Image (cartoon, rainbow, N blue to C red):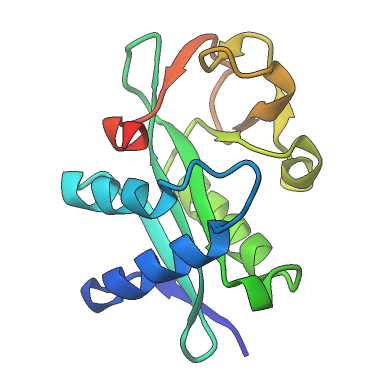
Length: 164
């Protein structure tokens, strides 16, 4: 049975290996996802970092703050989300995402953004918002979910760790 829990210090190496394995060969991967998580951790900006264990770690999700038009607030970015290749398609990633979004909402977050497959993330309530931009990414792949605040507009910037 899969359990969801906060990451622990001793999980860091396993999370890196898991993240690398999860994105290996993925067409949309930059190959830097593990470095992104490590950079967010080093910077102390992993607002939520949870693992799925069964009993070893089979999944991980990260949430970190974003800025909109340079202003900080209570908006967060979802990702990376990683699931071991042999466990993908079994609901592990969905459980991690739902638990993370619930935690953000309970903590007073106003919204969350994600860069990813619009069909996949729609199941969590994410939708494209032409008022939010992320570089030259096509708007259908950059989506937002309102968690308790008004819609925002402007250019979204993720933490510098995403530039790894």
